[in-house]
Structure formats: structure tokens, C-alpha cells
Length: 117
Image 1: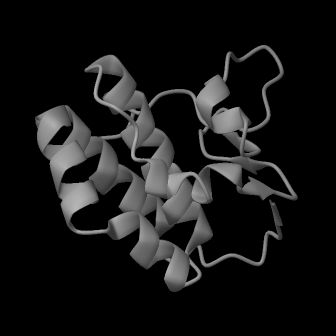
Image 2: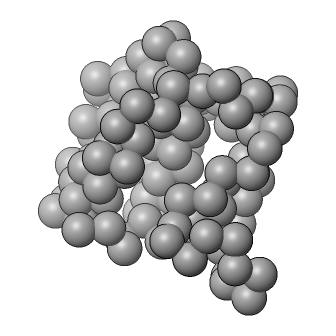
Image 3: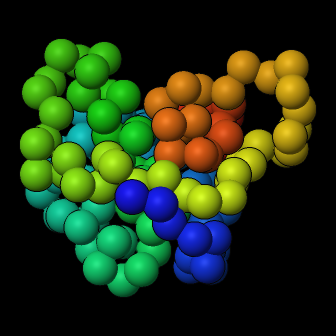
């Protein structure tokens, strides 16, 4: 699935900072909260595709880290790929940066899920 850049990015950087703060505070609590509150589905339904995918990638990475099975009901969202690249780091479009492959699969360029605060 290819998604256009006409995505809702209102307050995305504040959202990104909040996500990364939650992850730093408690990775397992982040997993529990995002699954139990259906945040990923809610973001998608509101047309906030970047928030949906960003949350899902973070969730999947943490599940993998703690050997928790991935939520199969999110497989649909795992197929989202943005048409235009989305660079999230201040080092915008640096070719020598090692962006995280988990995000690159969606055409999102992120360096770390721990770098904002």
C-alpha cells in the first residue's frame, strides 16, 4: 500500500517526543498501553497515517526486544509505505547516516526511537 504525503502531521514532532518519552520511561508499559487502547487503529481511522505507522514500528521493535509475539491484527498497517520519503531527524537527508531499517521499510527515515527529549 502506498500512501501520499497528504497526511495529517499536525503536532507530529510533539507526538514523536511523547512516544519516545513513554518508551524511555517504561518500554513494557508503552506496549501494554498502545495495544490495550487501540491507538494504532485509532490513528489510522483519523487519517493520521504517520502516527499510526510510527507507533506500530516502535511497538514491533519493543515486542521483538522482549520476545513478545507481534499483534497479527496490525498486519494491514505494516504494509503502509509512504510515496515520498519522510525524514524525521535533524540530520535531514544525510546519506552517510544509518537510518533504522524498521522505519525505512515504510519510507520513513529515523535514526533512533530514543533520541528525542
